Length: 119
Image (cartoon, rainbow, N blue to C red; front, side, top):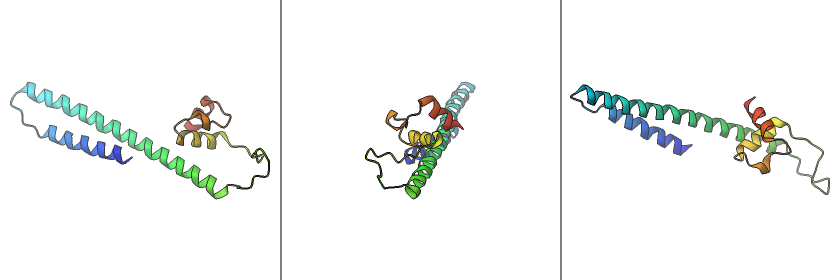
């Protein structure tokens, strides 16, 4: 997230520089306006990416806290199964926090995990 924050600050500074550029003709003003619009679109895109990254981090931290505070470390079964099932929403949180890796689907389809993540 710090990279996104740094990128956002850089684009904001660039937009400020563009808006301070002098112009003598309408064509120059129009060119500055176009460049400023592009910079503003970049700022908006980075703000969305930053918010998504914060949401992902929050979900991952919440999932980590849930599993670390209530985890049962006893391996009663030889195959490691405890008989507990993982809800599709918890599985979606873990799957998302691991970059949507197919090794973290816990028996759910990717479509099921996507729908649970959006809920």
